[in-house]
Image (cartoon, rainbow, N blue to C red; front, top):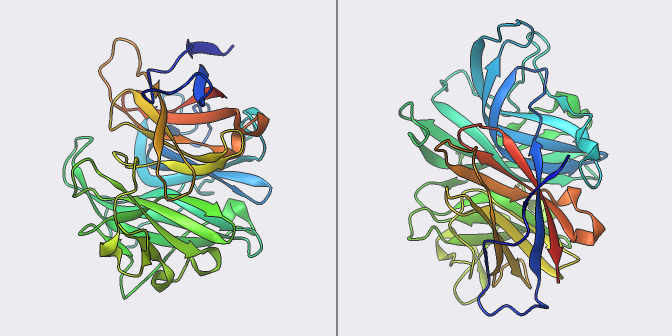
Length: 354
């Protein structure tokens, strides 16, 4: 039974009128995919994307237990994995999910594997993506991470890149990195990192990123024709004057968008604008922002609670929406986040009003 978490938001845009868009209700949808038979005992990230008649969910830093031993001993981990669900609104399509596994072990397998020269200190976290329905091809942005200790924050991003895979046979989906200028990393960590989210408007894709080097971690945005997503030279970056320029260093902060590592941006018919959803740092909040255009300006619609397990100290992160699950034209949306203690996707059903 769905338990109501809150009847009102924690915060709303100052001066917002009663007729302005707002959050009416937040309900607890429970933990997702914890009953899997593929050994997965914890995940984060948790992006989703329709690919044809199904939806692909991707995860990062996956802990694995023995899938058949009753004692469930820990057997290791992979830096990413995925599963397939049905496609459609609400939670019903999630019930019959299929984890993409290694047939030899029955364990969840990485969709973007390490090469022989990359040890397990090198991780690949899967972020925003685009699916070419006509070509049956997935384009997946990823972060290359290097760990330097055992703690949850003992890592550094080396950069972001793009990979692709055929989706003709989704169960066999395996990502292949696309090099640019002789490197897997399209955007090294010396500058803004793109690929945290992808939004589509007509034939144009908007690829969101963040500048970790600047105070407040401002959001940035690039655009590229959908047909040219695999061509690094086709990307244009929005500057302070509103012009789209070829130089990534010319990118300016997107007004009202920042402070995230992961997010989603998608047009919401009910709200009549572009809805961005992301965690507020590692606080117990998820922020909803609305903009008239994919490039902003974004204004905070609400911040809703993303509580961790009672009586435990934990941090909450990886907040994002799953637009394919929307109901009533976007009046009802579904958001997930991760509690660092439980280390599973927590689902929230959010009802909007205007």
